[in-house]
Length: 133
Image (cartoon, rainbow, N blue to C red; front, top):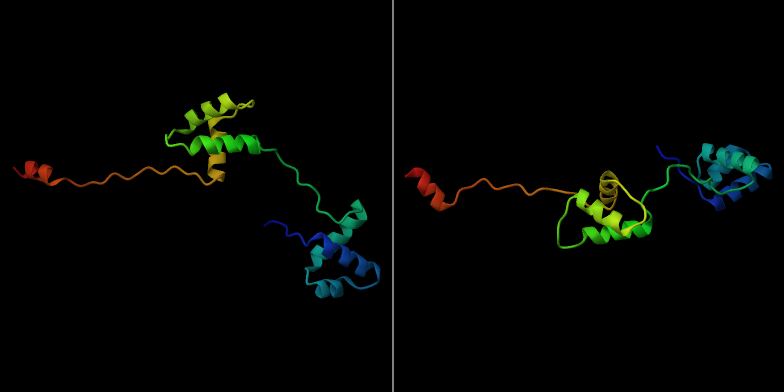
């Protein structure tokens, strides 16, 4: 489960009340935050000297916002195309080269999904007559 942030203002209040001599449990109850969030705010202030959440690490996105905008424009056209064709067009426009899997992943994030139309299995009256005869 993702860690919930309590906000910078509440962290400042919590540390100030703790430094004034209040107990952890009383301050947590007074500010309506969990005991462990309060304790983490104190530890973060002691170790780093800041109340802000640290920046998260991780692999950066391959497509920048401008390239994602180009991708969205390519998909919005009247002509339908598969991911490989869209990838070729996108690679022709941009400096970076991306794979078709990356394009599919970003399209899925933008909530573009492919769904094939189900073919109706019925016969017209003419065909029914020919089968009976």
